Image 1 (tube, rainbow, N blue to C red):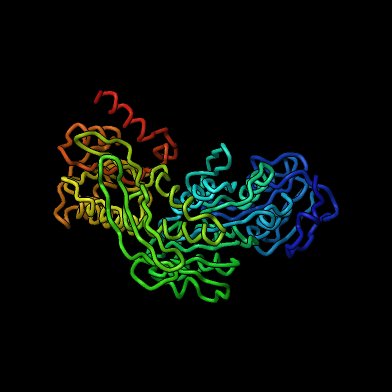
Image 2 (spheres, rainbow, N blue to C red):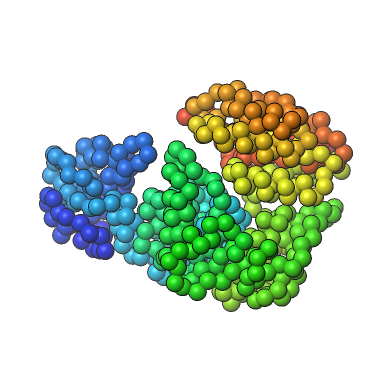
Length: 487
């Protein structure tokens, strides 16, 4: 049990009813999960308002209600008014778990693309050097042997502090986490001071319904990471660099391929051998050496540079970093899923325009006989994004197989019709196979020698979101079936 006034430390609040001098059990922001003597905090979301569920929370035993607007609340409960319930939740969660973030070295990574790969690279290098490091990101929460699924790239503040606490209690000393712009917009990371704030890049993505209203808002949200960091590592080749780092007064260390920087690449070689598929690059500046990374592409050289700088700042031996980069793999990020004498299959999560541009350009640079792309468009997303999807992938592929990718509440045929607008614009060759498993099998069964088959969009996901239901689907299961048939 915790004292309410202790949990509210650092929060500006007004007691509308009851008293803050009482003991509480836990904090809940989902009324369905409320138990006796809990705090229920009403959050406003995109489609629902937690204030509407206050009666349910009280009926389940809530002892304290946190609101951001004055309501007529009936029940023997303490009512606390705050200006912003999400900020309040962040500070209250930190207090409830005894402020674990202050006892950990926290590394926050933000960017339009590259967050997931970079965080995994950093973690693998730190683990290789004997540093116990946890990870929070789009593939889940990882520490020691634990892998915990999350719904968001950056979890709600309560879950973030809960897992900080768990990691700390299990001997973790460092945490590297994806710090999404959405998380800053929704104040999930309010109150956290990052030991290192990292920028992979910023482009013109994530603008639209349910995301960001404008590029200015998007950039401003990313800026929050660096205003709350003790030190910054930044990609000096990124767009919107001045805006993202606006007002930052802490030391900034830069890396680049094109521009001048504290750590710069002088040479990149793409390697596609029978025993190695990836890149080799040479650096100068803070580190003068040659490295190989088994995740292919120039943009993964950027991610490698970033990871190297982080580890340099943390005192890791560069030889250990070099060894880790040779073997690091990230589920669903440029993941080689199948290699035969005839063709290769690669899985990638790319779903933003910039990510897709980088992806197809990279694979073209490896000079496959044919690039065959299997992809679809997400439902309930802007049509313009689908037009661009067809244009970007269609323009770089020798054959496109359009299929399903989380159609949500739209029909697959309608989504694919929009994609065809972009495909037709660039004169792409394509066929349509609505079932994704069938589409993957078709690509493999009809492959010619030298094909590189690219499965775009699902990556690490293990579901198809259809009509409000998430049905199990894992591309690796399909690949396993294909492997059996090959044997």
